[in-house]
Image (tube, rainbow, N blue to C red; front, side, top):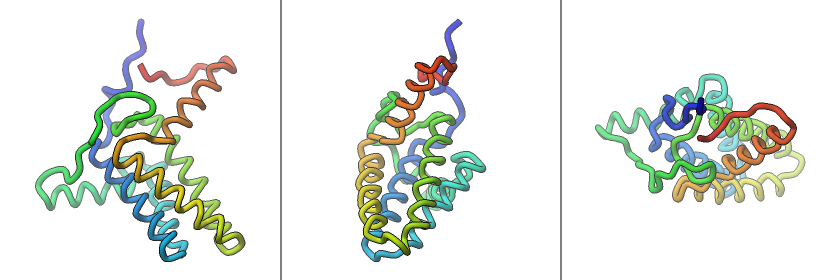
Length: 165
């Protein structure tokens, strides 16, 4: 019997995922531009809340909901609606958790390193800005690439892992 597709599972509005990615890009850019760690802390808060309460509890997703209600419609729609591991706006719950864990680890590390190695923090903020802007505009998600690679490694080790199809 085939495994049910994760595409049919309940998840956030794809416009909300896109909004979240662009909000992360904007926060990372603000951290780089002003060389302040607080915007990175905002990304960390979003990641922790998303990890604890699912994507629907992430502050940037909630902000999209509020702004969409005020506007009377979704304020962002996906530019690409492909269902592959690398180009997507509608993420599976497993991918959501994986990406939130990645962001929580990375942003925690950046917050801890900021007083000691600020050049690294601002350089990585620039990289994060670029990757999240790319993800938020055309849908190419490095987190999804890492997730697919992680699943491949898990399968090669002989463990059962989630499937995309």
